[in-house]
Image (cartoon, rainbow, N blue to C red):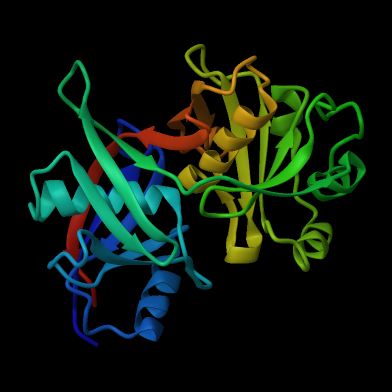
Length: 296
């Protein structure tokens, strides 16, 4: 196996060792999928990305994403972190937008300057798709919570995807969110035949004053017991919020906290624009450089 270079970033945070860590490997055209999977398993981050060529194809850069267990079509924090490496470290473009060619399709990432001249990155999600609605009693067994008191029954438990199918679970309080303990047997029983195998539970209470929501995300099916920051699942949450309007509007502009129970506090920005009958979902955040090196 060749010894490719890699970069480590923390995504959805403005400080090192917050957010979700990502390893991005470059010049990976000679690596097989099995070799990429082995590296991702050894690193054991929630996802690892591989840039297979520095030359753009059809206006975008070819990127593959692996969890420790499998290759996935799309994931949020790997998309933002890899776009950052392409533009800021490899200097392959100076444009304000970088397009990644992923298995799910082309995902554009926009770099926008904030008042402190640090770029916040925004990725446009795929058009929303909605699946089944489930009963609170079933999720209570999975999350080890009390039904109905721990659930916000004004809104449904529903499968949603803006690129990565996620089961959205509204809870009644931040206290309930903090009490979640996954029952693995019940989780895998639920995931066996489900479209959405990832669970995002949320509360309309923030961990911090500038946050409108708090979330926790569980994806043991993909080898991730709990994720520190998940752009893809939060994109699905944004589409859910636009559809069911807990904030009174289908246009969404909120900030979400995640990863606090894991000691990896993350901050994600969600926006949904509904214009001309089209729902456009965006997930934003910051990326911080941590390290770089050679693998092997």
